[in-house]
Image (cartoon, rainbow, N blue to C red; front, side):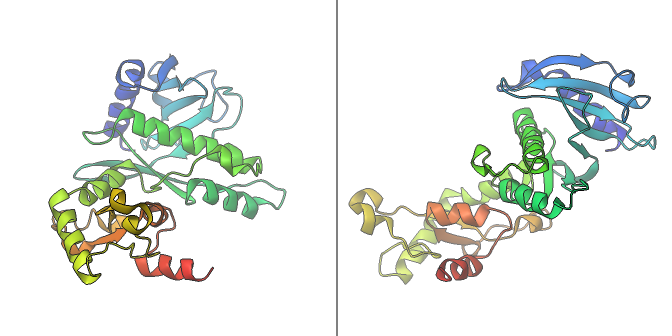
Length: 282
């Protein structure tokens, strides 16, 4: 991170207890050179360290000049800071509506089981690459901290080769909250969704089957399910920033049931055609 972004983030983290609904600040380290914390970080310049809890888990979040080159890292440490860091995020992507940090899970254990670890991490997180959106007008501090805590939990699970994947829920978007919210905003244009529904119904003699599995809510639930279907925005998330000024069209929306919609949102992302092929393979 450039120093300006890092400084702004540290000022936000200082206000965790005041600004957050789900997290509170337990302890902190003042801005300056880190001393007496951990071998990897001692002697480094920092914009501070923050011990943050969500009530059940507690993490240290340090904003430090990790390599002494004025490129600041967001480093996650367990509450017991004698242990190694859990993640070091510094690769920064900035668009007109916010900043994202990226990190990739690369286990380096020497027991020849790292491929298994990567598979476990991908199964529970949804991807090996994690994107964390920093707080802005659309992304809350809770959004950012939830993603950081989830990365840490997935890291611990994979490192320890824990098979109980049910203990963690995969994130819907590994690309970060900023693109997630941008994606959902395009799916929630009610006027556009209504137009897409009418066109879809016209193609199917008044019915609204899912474009992937053909499930029809009215056929299953009667009048209670009439006119119910969800809209999925088909433009890939990694193209949303490139097409910021492009207006969403009816053709960009697919009509899908809730189950298929969730699968379409799960990494690695698939097109309607790809998910349909996957479903038909069983």
